Amino acid sequence: MTTNSHGVSARRAKAVALIESGLIRSQSDLVSHLKKAGFRVTQATASRDLEELGVIRGRDNDGDSVYKLEKSSDDALSRVTPLPAKLILSVDYSANLAVIHTPPGAAAFLASSLDHAHLTGVIGTIAGDDTIILVSKKATGGAQLAKELLAYADTNSKKGKRK
Image 1 (spheres, rainbow, N blue to C red):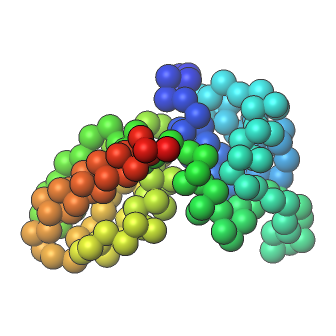
Image 2: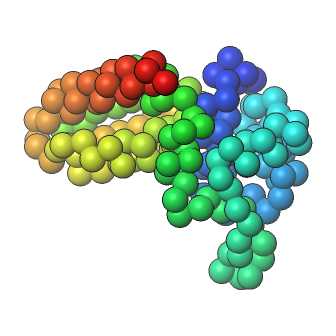
């Protein structure tokens, strides 16, 4: 499976997830893991992605060198990654849940973006590779949550067009 059709946003979202997992110790590791995930990527592309995402070298708990996202990387991610609206393929809801489908590898990034958006009535998010579950505080809040999510995506999409 090649995910080139999903472009830069999905690849970078997957890179962020890999870096946050502590698996990436070098550009070669990033290239290898992205290829295993179905992305066509070269060393040069990985290098550009790391720079654009604001990735730094740090140490893990064992003292080994690893790539890490800077603490202030939220601003960097929002600047260089296409808006969340472009990552939302579909939204559905049931009872107190809203379910979002994204391109492969994009769910972790979008879930983080939603966490930082402070959507009203959201207890939290759970992200897989291409699916996010948002949990509402209200037992029947799934529909409202889906509505807020779509409004959030629409608002951010319009902001992006003003650039």
